[in-house]
Length: 389
Image (tube, rainbow, N blue to C red; front, side, top):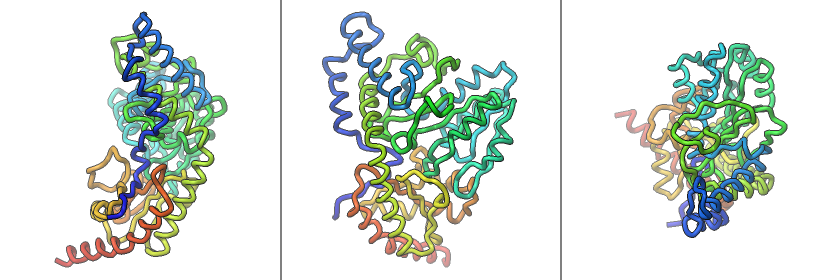
């Protein structure tokens, strides 16, 4: 059997060797608790502070604006619930987001609503872009925080974060962006784009799972989700994961340094994959093609197929893809992202996300394109036979 092909880099990426090498000492001789006053603790504290400074530099931020977390989900919850709870007595009652956000954001917004917030959602265009007039309508003087993801994790749409953040600031609202899929793909600079809170995750850029960060602009008060310690200025109590933070810092530096070349390489691979599929399966639909997209995500549906059968057929040929967000694996309902941009249930239920990255080669793309039409025909035939019974 040919070598397996991994096309799920939007779900997670392999840990880079440079990252692993940077982390290893902190599982050995540099094992100290950064809150301890002795030499082992001071050594760990120095490494942690340096990691914070390095991540901050990659985001155009100051080191005291970076709070390490266990990943993107925790970071999103700190951003939205932390800001909402801090502002809940100010008279600003609305929390605004889009219907295509990651479930971590949507879940945090729903929780804020349970605590008294008024949740509002923007309208969407069929490209996956936020309808700007709708955003301006729903983000107004009573808005506490608005949250819009920079790059969508299912279809890759890039949102105009600068414009959205500036409107939010003009009416006195805080602005948060989930940049988990953006970091390493688009330029992020907290010194020029006026977001108040931003979240990133390590395992999307070659760092290990279980580490992320939330940028909290200096002067902004965030209510902590956890209690019991004074770590990280009380914003996120608990003993810090020094090894993972060091690894994340190294991965962030590499991602920023390689970003432009990385974009061009992934864009070539994505375009080759899309063109090959559309040439061989003319009725295939690639979602989000009409607007700006990050270079690593292809989301395609073929009428007469279904996501579950296609994923199984691809996996049997050694090709790993997903039906959307990895956090939603096992779900049989159509993608909430595709439904929100007006995709029919039939097509949304047939969607496959292929995401290219460090493990993707032109040869791998060509093999996927070669086997894809036969798999489509097989699944279509099986579905047609089942419908006829």
